[in-house]
Length: 335
Image 1: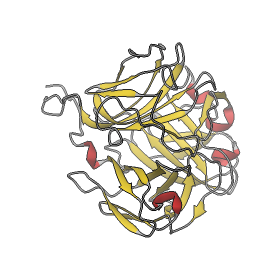
Image 2 (image 1 turned 120 degrees about the vertical axis):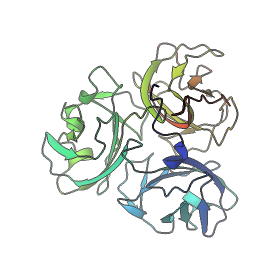
Image 3 (image 1 turned 135 degrees about the vertical axis):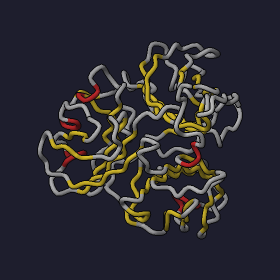
């Protein structure tokens, strides 16, 4: 029998959690049937214009980076005070716990099984520097941030261009892909290392940096590309091999509607998924003009907005709610 997936329960490695702020302190418990301690946590207030808050186990929960900003890290235990056995705890900071606000969090478990690694390192300012990782597979997405100084988020995506190691995207902007050797030294990553250029955002001498790396895992994660068709009611179908729980897309060939747009299965548990957040801004959640359907084996963008411009080239990151077919050959259903 064919091996459909090695991960029958994606909730062991990725979960979305919605919660309501209380303006004080609170512990947030994840909803999955199995406990999962987050190693990488991303929080966004849906109702208010506040920055996307990112913490991880390597830096520690009190070290916060903002996905929509190039700022260096902020140390503040009053945002995320701990990463817990089945969730996390937040303080009273308004970015993560405004009273009565609707808030979303996305949680990942670091694991080679799930194709995710977090690497902290110190820059040396030298071109063609190799950094070891623990995926035991070639990374398909790499996101790097300088923690010490204010430089942008450098993003490598293996479907960005025909030679993605020569180019970079930047998480905090809607800019099109840029041809630069400063990020990846024009060297493709391998199953053991990723290579850095001399750019300050990825390798400034003596600065502390953090890297998040993902590789495709059949039935759990997919990092691909597609061309928009601009058809309002019948956008392109993108096959992932699973029912998505999380989809992030970005137009790469133009700044026109080039935002990083994010949907999940909790804010809209039924199709169409109309509630979206834009990663490169601090804006509150939007709910019209940019929607997708999350299907049993992929997703389908609608409208002619951010992720379905006719002829536009898009990259995406997607994580599973359920594999299309589990390891016993049993298919899942559309939602």
